[in-house]
Amino acid sequence: MINNALFPVKEVPAIGAPSDTIFSGDEIHKTGYKFIVREDTGSVLSCMTDEYKLVTNQEIYDIAHPVITKFGGVPREVEVLSDGKKTSIKYCIPDVKVKISEKDVLNPEIVIRNSYNGAWELAVMGGAFRLICSNGMIVGYIVDKKTNRHSIYNASLNNLEEMIVDTVENIGEKFEGEFQLLIDTKVPRELIMKEVFKMIPDKYMEPYVQYIIGQKPNNFWDLHNSLTWLNTHHMKRGSATAHKFESNIHPTIVKWAQRIGHA
Image (cartoon, rainbow, N blue to C red; front, side, top):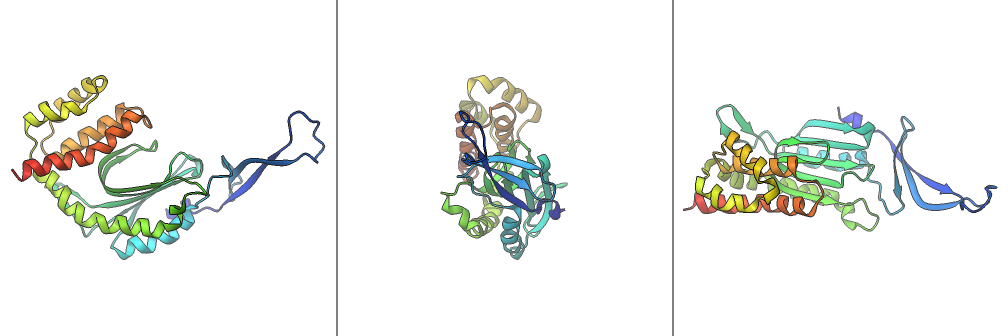
């Protein structure tokens, strides 16, 4: 239920006194921090610096919902995690479909994430997702992804509607084009041996080999999933290695599929 995510939130200044004085009340001053408080329960969701810019779920929903539904999107799932500290809102676009098999048809999805504790940046993602974990890990096909830090200096936070429109407009063409190519193009065994293995850091080679032996990637969609699985399940989230690996997956897989598919 979307209403579970739209609870009121407020900022409360964190104030204190110098530690080397006897507190009398006159020494109260700003600390450079503030509390993000859930108004309906009174619970403190986080303590953030004054540079943190609060963007509420209600603000996001009021902008995103009419934009996405205009493009044919329908609400699919709302997750409110950690007593409201993190929220994920998912829409699907049912009129756009890619058939993977007789029993497996995927629709493009728009996922919007927000947090009140800094765990997630404000993110708008478009793609086809097999798994989206509460720790931020994603398995699937990302067509477009825009993230923004909750910072008072980040002017992009004022352009949420533009972010969403760009994502929705990109998803249809790319989903039916690039994604269909991944589904339709078989993965040559020699490509896995000669090129895919070169992508894998040595310390992660063993679990990856075990995975593909069991899963046997057939097409480039399977291969895409195998690499995102390794990234999300074995690499340390937030590390430079994981970030670089994740950023290379999509463009590399598409490049290979285009080369093989057009050969």
